[in-house]
Amino acid sequence: MKDRKILLSYGSGGSYMHKIIKDIFVHKFNSPTLSELTDSAVLKNLSKDYEICFTTDSYTVEPIFFPGGDIGKLAVCGTINDIGVMGANPIFLSCGIIVEEGLEVKILERIVQSMAITAKKAGVEIVTGDFKVVEKGKADRIFINTSGIGIRRKKVKMGKRFIRSGDTVIINGTIGEHELAVLLARKQFGLSASMKSDCAPLHKLIEDVLNTSDNIHFMRDPTRGGIATTLNEIVDGTNYGILLDEEKIPVGKKVSSLCEILGFDPLYLANEGKVVIICGKKDTAKVLSAMRKHPLGRKSTVIGEVVKGYEGQVVMKTVVGSYRIVDMLSGSQLPRIC
Image 1 (cartoon, rainbow, N blue to C red):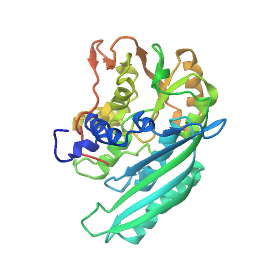
Image 2 (image 1 turned 30 degrees about the horizontal axis):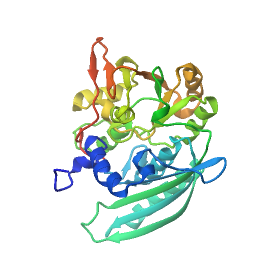
Image 3 (image 1 turned 45 degrees about the vertical axis):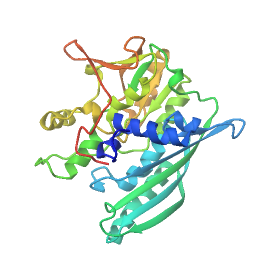
Image 4 (image 1 turned 90 degrees about the vertical axis):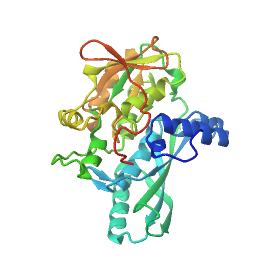
């Protein structure tokens, strides 16, 4: 890498972060499993009928409490979703917490209680953890790391290699609420508007999808970098592309208005309760039907398709009929939220 110091943009979820992951971590660790860069590692050949999925993630957000969630709920949901999009059922979580000296005990209690409630509702158990305190000024109040273990049936076959031209691209609802909820909670834009984060565990919705169709080829939750970055991750290094239809991308009126005011592109806004599903075309209708029966999938819709053209690219047909390339987020589009 030409940069001698880590830049903030390396944690944005975009191309800078992908480069440092590949150039340093994937290269140095030299693990075939890691090199697949999936949301969870699939640990094969552990039993006759099942595989174990294992994931880890670290969380920092400002403010730590925001409409619709907090850093604790975010950590639990994020790890559950990284397991769920692999087609696995999350079972166990760990919880590692680093707090800055001076943090009020009642704040820590509130965060841990939120984690406990979220885990219980999701049907997962937090079974191990760690707790550290660092000197004042050495951390931003609180950092959380959660790891998760899930189990999936070996008959579940998903991954980039299963994606085919003609597959449909589905999302389970409107985009952008989480990032705007966090930014507005900072009250730094002089706006009186507020928004609720979409932060939620998605594994039960995903379970309904997998029980409906054996033709699900890929899933990923579009968090940092938004759906634009997620879709670019999917087509990266492949011989196919994705064609989006701007008219079909679900953006709520409030998100659309705020993006116009603030100069943001909703395609790059982080989500914490959305899943992108690549589905065989013949099963699209029944998958949508199943999703729309779940509370977290009421607004599920097709937003595009996999195409033979545009190799390794995401292209969007605009509302005026023209076409534009949708690149992966490079630096940071917005003030950082995590």
